[in-house]
Length: 194
Image (cartoon, rainbow, N blue to C red; front, top):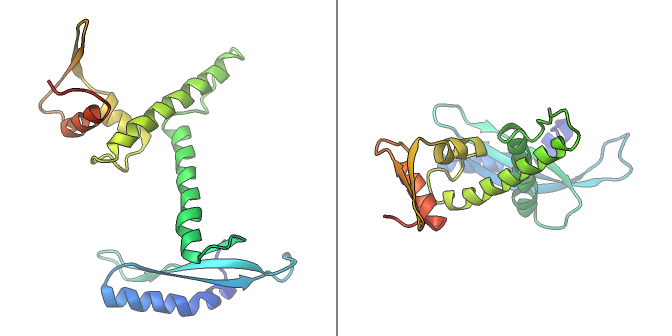
């Protein structure tokens, strides 16, 4: 929910505490709280609002207050609701954005009716494969990489591939900047070093 003067006033004591903790430690600090709130005209009854009061510290910048408000009917603690429910929703929205921007799932420019749903299906299948690639990459420097970065660093490679009846050997350049990451991911997916 967007902040307003009433919510800011209700969160002020907790915001002061977050600012004080941030000043003492020199780091960003979060303090959670809750209140009942109702708009005067549009809500029939007060609703539970949880808030995260944050004293933000960034290197080279002045400290800043950052209150955030979430309306909920859930019964858990404010911290749990904010971190485990609200922030997870944001992560899901990032995955949807990846589908649109990184995988171009909305690209349905085929002239045939059945070609467009098939194209969406193939894009969704490719995205699932990228998620499987993301799991072993979580222990590398690609742990926060989005789909386009995984594609650039681990799939779009210049390599010499030698295949035989029993195995496929991928020869990468020693100057490949993501060689260690590629090796870790390949070994985690079942490849054998040779």
